[in-house]
Image (cartoon, rainbow, N blue to C red):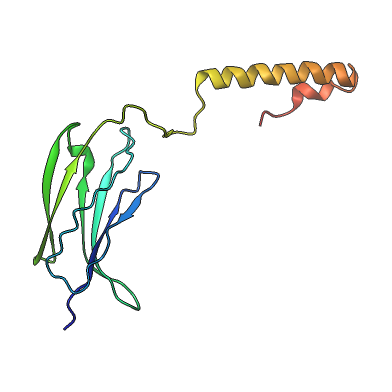
Length: 149
């Protein structure tokens, strides 16, 4: 019987960098990872953390168990030690905390802000006016029937 070479995969599908992984330990049944991972969460989404305990092998890694945790159930500023049981045998404890990023550097939506929409509208009108001047009144009739892209 092979002693496992465990590592853990953490996955939150609603985050941009959604998959993280610990290092693996060779032949260790009681690993202590003591690693820190950060996810940027969209507060408007239901963020579910999927924890997968893996066994590293030469040919193909083996899944030892999977568990989930609703990150949305945590309060901002709260620290929690959450136990997870895999296959009714293996217990793993994750320490988690939820914090607000004071300066998020990520957009959660592809929607444009109002200022960008106004800028694009004004630019479109300026381009049409300048094209009308350049092409003359006869050739510029089709400008107002073109689709916005």
